[in-house]
Length: 165
Image (cartoon, rainbow, N blue to C red; front, top):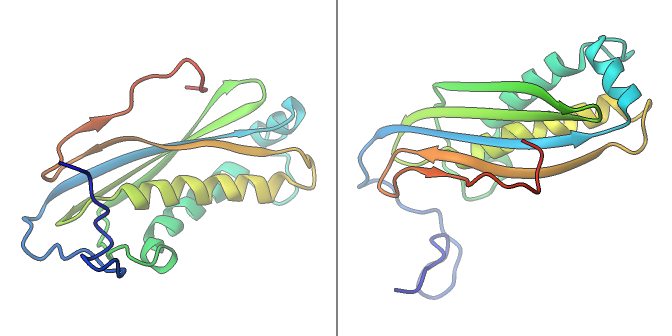
């Protein structure tokens, strides 16, 4: 069977997928992004010396807010009553911060877009807060890491040696 794009009907017109007949289940999605910068900039973040404030805490709040606004940003997303959004930061190297977002909901559709939006908005916030100190900041490797719940089952991205974990 050939895969189909669910946001288009038989005639090719855009549509919001009808999830009315699907059962409500717990859904979870985890996404990540990496923000690269000069090591000195990362030190400023870790030492909370960026003049705009605590970069990671502001990025955490921005990511949570972004997840809640996903249907306002992505035209065909269903509005969801999220039960949880968590944003975590790690430092895999001297020049990068890895952002991970986990979104949860009890609903008829998944939360992949909310997790991806959360991590992207958090990464954009890190960029915005650091751009005066470092014009070379780069956002990369935005991706879904895991999803669970619903008919399509559990997905976990295979580890890749080409990305920062």
